[in-house]
View 1 (tube, rainbow, N blue to C red):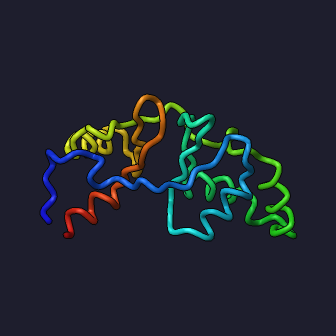
View 2: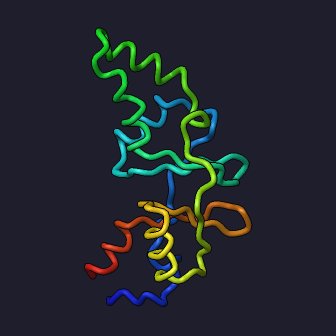
Length: 139
């Protein structure tokens, strides 16, 4: 299958998503990243997309405490204390499932993103990543 840039985003986006709630802890997020091969987690409240947290966001947050004595104990309690809503990225660029792949590429380029939530009627329906596009090109 050759990637057609005029195809719809829905043809290559991920539809089975792991999501978190703004009140979930960063420890919950760390567990998801540790147990799944993903790098971005949409943050959803009442089926509505409210933000995104990335593995990079979590690593930046953790990096400041890597030199602390007893860092493992300190890190776990700190990750339990902070909520996703305090760290997530808000005001995200989004796409519609009917947007074309060439539009997605332009949004990636303009916003320096690696993942874009796909929404329909304000509800999260998928996620498209630069990896999805590379995989589609490789087929």
